[in-house]
Image (cartoon, rainbow, N blue to C red):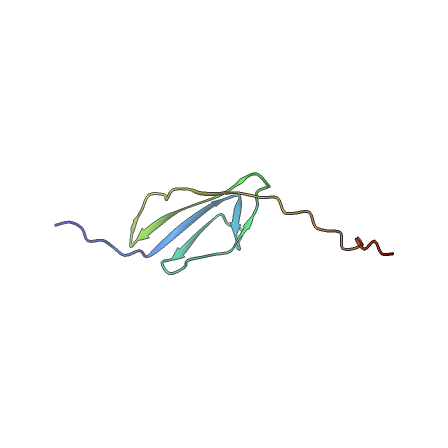
Length: 88
């Protein structure tokens, strides 16, 4: 008789060039958590990557395909003291 499918109980996410709010690059989540804040630690042009392992009871999956996104440089801020008004 084939083994029955076990429901998802948790998953673990692994980051590169980013951290969770506790400054860790890995975190275990419950089966109901769908998002978490991260802070980018890499520089412009580098890749933020993430992958996960799912747990179904005491069984774990292989790693997911890796997700990646290129880090974009922040735009240069406008000097707040600069006056573009030419009517002086």
